[in-house]
Length: 92
Image 1 (cartoon, rainbow, N blue to C red):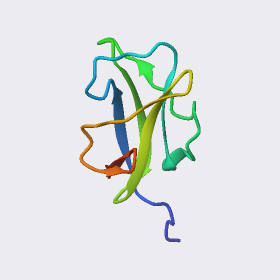
Image 2: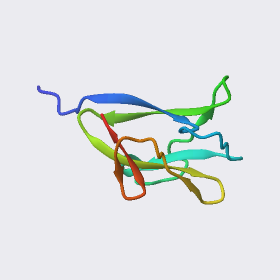
Image 3: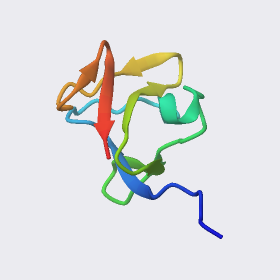
Image 4: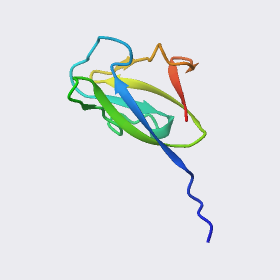
């Protein structure tokens, strides 16, 4: 029986995205891959002081995302190679 599962790729998203700002409280990556739901992909603190999360995404796809910190504070990734309005775009 053929598999209908799509190939996935693991994407590591790391905060801070090119900035020295580190907001207090939780930070989530929200996007079209998780219906923009805060807390679905919360970044965890790493030993180097940065925060990161790994998100499984379908291969050969494009996704819009942003970072959302506590207090409804949105962060953009200005260094992203592609944007969709205020959203950063990730190509797998």
